[in-house]
Image (cartoon, rainbow, N blue to C red; front, side, top):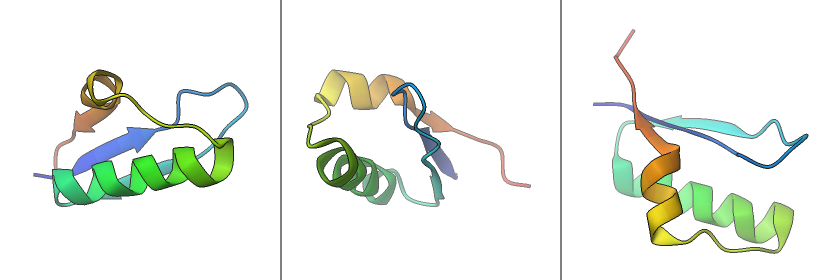
Amino acid sequence: MPYQFRCPRERCCFELRCDADHEAARLARAHARVAHCDRIAPADLDRWLERIEAA
């Protein structure tokens, strides 16, 4: 099942979609680290990573 992540930061348009949850989580963490010099807590990542229906 595909997964989606949208950066919750104000004025950040980063969005990703991946087939694997571990890959989406890895890329979301990398985005937070590179773009915002920050880390995502595991609990927040669980809330922000969504399962989506395949098109």
